[in-house]
Length: 135
Ligand SMILES: [Zn+2]
Image (tube, rainbow, N blue to C red):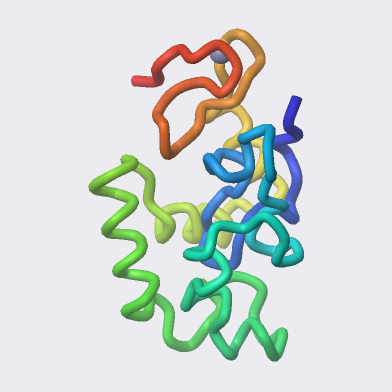
């Protein structure tokens, strides 16, 4: 079963890669936004946030510590996810900032856990193991 409690699976934008469709699939599994560019959907490779110069220069680890936070790219992504998937990157980032990354990761683990032990996929809105729909 996919491990969903890794700090390295939280992308700079606040996305939790462990609940992503591309990460949860069995074939050509994506290593997560912070992983190497193998098996990644092209939208992830071209991601404006991941390719943002501040990350490339290792100046900031998460968007909230950037001087431009929240920038247009992030706002755009956040809006899309709020409307389509009922999840907010900006809210995640605020939680990471306030709780710390480890507490955030463990709260995420609870948030997206299915009673069967599987993980709820944010994109599909159902468990990747048993298929049960989340509310
Ligand atoms: Zn399940």
